[in-house]
Length: 170
Image 1 (tube, one colour):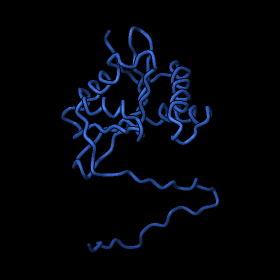
Image 2 (image 1 turned 120 degrees about the vertical axis):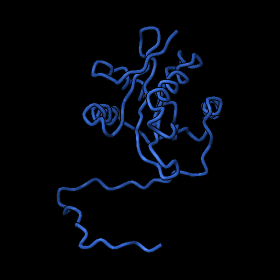
Image 3 (image 1 turned 135 degrees about the vertical axis):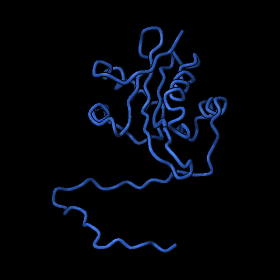
Image 4 (image 1 turned 60 degrees about the vertical axis):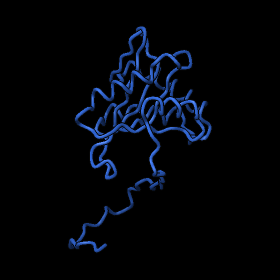
């Protein structure tokens, strides 16, 4: 059956939120997320599409998954890169070409406008990693490191403006 991809709409929120909670159960190494946090995230993508897109994936007339996709510039790629930040397909729909269809859709949408599509994969998910390899993805020589930033407090002053631009010496 054909698979369709579209932007998540408000009517889809309950299903997507259930999927987000299911993903949290399936991937215990991920940071914990409450239902309230997931709701805030879904609303954020609705209200600020420049941060990324929340997509729903449909098959046989029903939603079978979702993806969070962001777009940014990469020095390594020397251009725009589309990143699948999160992907969930319902267990009953796995193995039926849903992920392949989503990635095909992304390639069609971004061909000629982006250098590559990146996929984030859980470290222990060898099955999904194998699927990504079969679809042409390769491991990069980079490991992503991350440092959390504190929440902005109303008592903090705004960031200072640079007084003078100086050329960095390498």
